[in-house]
Image 1 (cartoon, rainbow, N blue to C red):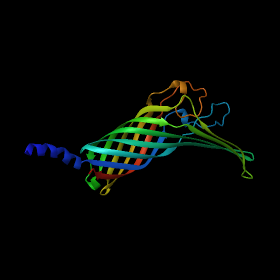
Image 2: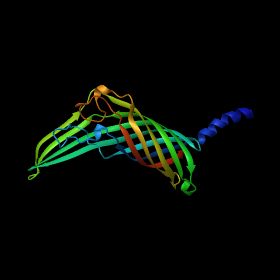
Image 3: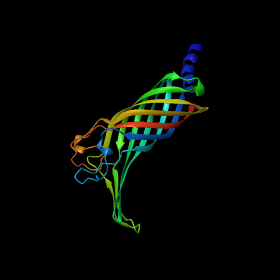
Image 4: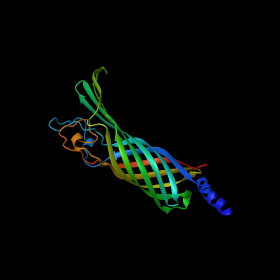
Length: 242
């Protein structure tokens, strides 16, 4: 009878000790390399190809992660990250301002494997490395062209359109590696900060579509890799399952 109670009690005790770490916060993405999505929407030189995306700077986003410690140095989990890409341009002509805006939303769903090689004595701090195989979904683009009378401030012409660059839908598989730190703020609240590098479209590229993040296929003969640098600053809440 004691053995039965022991074997029943072990999984119940393990469940009672299960810890879940829920994190959310800001995440930014920066396209790097010579990906065409980083080029201007309209080239100032009419002899050059135009209609890039203008995604040359850091793009804002949000992240949500759920982690479960398997052992003191290992965690597994899932994460969702959504980045709001926006490219802007303005041309000043005589008596006329031209505004261009192109936006796209990129959503990544990742499986997370995290390893903690170092712990610090202060604030229960630690350093971690992680690997994230990721499924990425790219939304349709939104393009806005506007001509404004610079003297009167009135809109002369406006084009507002949703761009569906075929073939749709757009799903890609990639991977991101991260290096970061974490620590306790006040139990059960923690912070996490990390920086990483990866590729959005490591697998599943479709050359017939052209580039992944540009609005139209003009002189595009394939889909190049979309490497990114990612940075996240998260607030974490740690709790035990009942």
